[in-house]
Length: 479
Ligand code: BES
Ligand code: MN
Ligand code: ZN
Image 1 (cartoon, protein in one colour):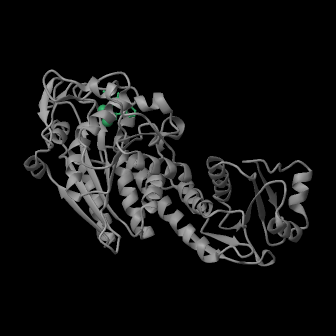
Image 2 (cartoon, rainbow, N blue to C red):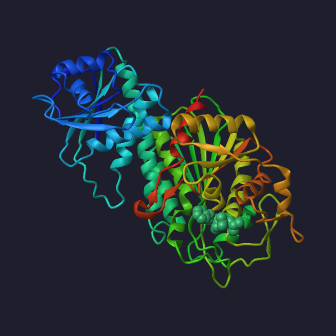
Image 3 (cartoon, rainbow, N blue to C red):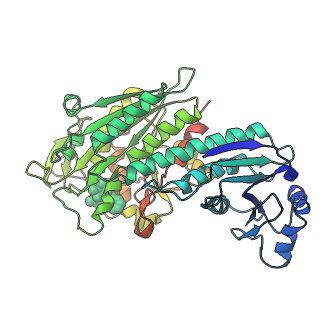
């Protein structure tokens, strides 16, 4: 799939499909196209075939001798980011048909830069297939800039969208890969191959013995019962030309979560292969950062383990000591994500981070609170929370903040250790409170992606979220 940008005149375009987004009131550039096509757009509107309302669509065969299909998609003035993404995705899925090999997409001056980013991102996203049998034959999309819409801006936006789209697809592919293949070792290999391909990334893998020396007994307690060795993947992306404090991303990667001795019920347990999607999103971001060559320093930490029951598994009531020195009573071995994150969050200190953001499929409870649309956010910094909320809105990959009040934190009291690993009814918040005990030294936010990282049912599969949000956030931090 190739994306090109041009200023080809409408009279010169020869294509399988021409995509035009418009409301029912045509602007000057669309009027020009309409005139060139003998008023076909006006006619479609007059005859009621095309309403121009958001997300309406209509395909006109043989709009002219050279234009085999004119694909109209309704775009009303002043529509929301979410709607505008949906209608671009509709245009994208319309050209990913087996009989279309080349297409042209009209960019008029109503487009904002971010919308152009969404075009290439959507095409890559919709064209992804785990089994590698995508039906599309599209080999080239030409983004045709009308008027003086800057050609080089369009090119930059398209490339950025491609980087994000490919990062999302890497994240999805790792998420979708079954747990018998996608083990902690597999993820570590993947991280190493990313740094082999990109000189600005350095990857180090901490093995179990090194983690034991560092005192990461909380992390190690989770993988104890697994035949697969646990890993801490450390990736350093050095894109900044100046000395700059890094942003640290910590991604939960439980390659399969059985619950351990607090075993999960059998129904739907297959979906716990997605419990590494936080880690996968960090890998996706690392790849997208290198492709977009963002001038920023980012450290990715991915604690990778498999949560299994066995003779040497952690038992409910066991007390272990984390790297920070805080002791933890493990009341439920299924609340394992926080046990691997806490040691990685302590490890994050050594990078003297500007901000730390962790990404985790941490609690089923977040789905009860926010459904499958929105990522839950908890933070000890209003400044960071506000940046992330804004980046969520502008990338369409939204988050909503929940409170970290002390009433919740008090529910983590234990008679036998400093902290219990579960407590209380508001599961997403108490999980956030647990993590906040380990993040006192820096500005931190936690993203609970249990509802947003994958889709269940007929279209089961990883979504690639929150790669768009994280990329938007990192881009906002380039100075
Ligand atoms: N990986 C799960 C969270 C999860 C559950 C994500 C269902 C998506 C769907 C996590 O490790 C977990 O098991 N959390 C428990 C915590 C509880 C024991 C306090 C949960 O949410 O039930
Ligand atoms: Mn669990
Ligand atoms: Zn889990």
